[in-house]
Structures are given as structure tokens and as C-alpha cells.
Image (cartoon, rainbow, N blue to C red; front, side, top):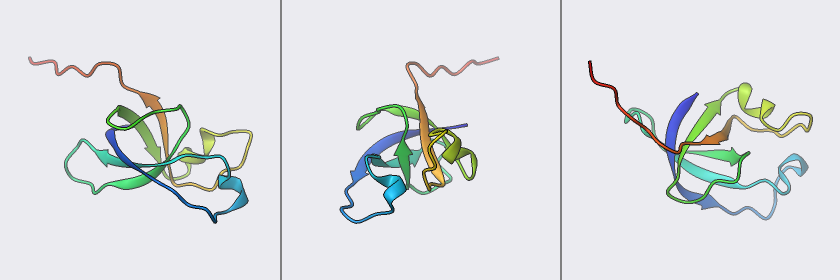
Length: 86
């Protein structure tokens, strides 16, 4: 799993039937190395929230037993993020 921040959303009126009813959000990874990307929302997040996301094949598992064609999915909301120093 990875950590990112929701920075926007995408609206699409024509899409695959498997995507009907799904929210598509723009996620900016917090690692600073990746570019923002689109992800389906499996947990009901909102703009500005810090989230957990998965990519590749595991992303579609968040919607099981339904088949949803996606390569990134938001699977959790981060309540608190702490850095532990040695």
C-alpha cells in the first residue's frame, strides 16, 4: 500500500459499464517521486484527505465480487501519520 492525497476528481459521462457509479479521483503520491494519477474510490474519501492506495491488479480486488476495470484504487483513509525518529 502507498500513501497519497486526494487533489481532485474526474467526471466522465461515457465509460465502461463496470465503472458506472464509481468515483474517479486524482491522487498525488506523498513519496515525491510519482506523478498524480487517477484512482477509483472504494471507501468514500473527499478532497484533501490523505489516503491509502493500491495499484496494478490488486486495485480491482477492492471491489470484489464485482469486476471493476481499474489499475489504482483508494482503499483507506489515513487518520494520523506520524514519523518515528530513532
